[in-house]
Image (cartoon, rainbow, N blue to C red; front, side, top):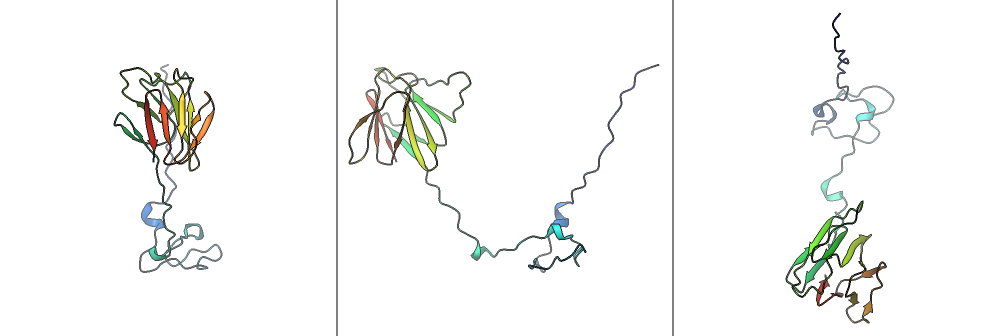
Length: 171
């Protein structure tokens, strides 16, 4: 007896095609049109109803303003999530970041992985990663603050962040 492979039965896709759920433009959906379990004159069941919103009535898209880090070495980076900054930044085992930002520092005053940054809501934060020369946050019109390693600090636009002999501005 030869062994035969059993193939599972094919299942037809029960979802309606895209053209069956979009009502014609001449007949927009009207509130209260689908009452009961009957099918309407277009053949659409009640669960296929859609709301029609005029473009003029649609709420405006939320404006999202991104943070930019402008480095003394000429690099500019848009913050897209979390990241690491240094001469040759690397993640720790099991760590995930969205960006690795390598900056040029021939004097080696910036550590390989000097600091971490990220977004929390609409705020940007930085965290010194136990760098050799430390991190100092200088808010515009405020008092400079030496950042304690391993602790997150919120930084606003206009803040200058010193990392070794280099720095970046937050905008």
